[in-house]
Length: 323
Image (cartoon, rainbow, N blue to C red; front, side, top):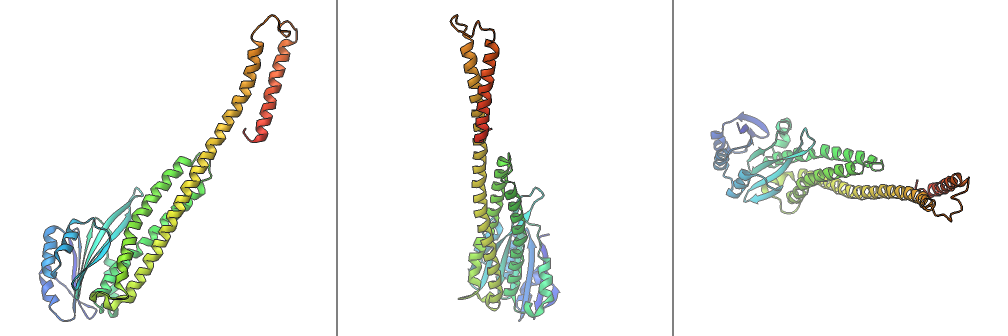
């Protein structure tokens, strides 16, 4: 079922679990807050919620289609927020889901899509703090956003650890191709996380200071705290992007150096064998006028000259660091 829970609160304390049909009745009660959580809601279920809460058509359309960028849109006295839920799959890839949050003066509706990450702990936290929950829908919205943002920090730590591991292997011989593959995979993960964080940071800036939406008027300092967390995450991601770019350049340089060393070795051995080939070619022409041809010690002498020349070249190349 798409409906996870549907609860009514008054003055920060839980009144009762209610049915969808009872939502409008409790919304009409003074000082009553209705908090509904859904998962992978169908079009019909969203239409029912739209009728119960009076949601804007454009907001419901975005929630129905999904695949939205993080944002916070204001429709009269209600807000519509989109946040990305990022999970690590068993194949070490990042899976991106969404949570759509509708916030009104006396209600909060959250709809998760393509994500197994729940918010039961958020509800329990709010119910343990009735003096904060009594602030209304703005605090519930903050609690949901704070939970989403806090789940980004472990991902940041994992990415930083992975980057440190790659950096330690950059100067190892023969690891160039593998390092570049890992760096580009890490860069994709950083980009996915950055696409979730940066738009949300820009959008959350309007929830504190200046003209704040009425639903969030009593929770400005809490949203400022979330904004600060997003700024920290963005700074970390930008630092990782710069480090990855530098690591890629260093890795390419190391690969070039390794290739240059191989070229030097090949050139050195080619020079040594070229000298031996030149001597062998000269003495192998068998002209009658060659004095060494009839000499008893000609053959040992030729071998000695070739060996001495090759030995000298080997010593010289070794001294230059080519071998």
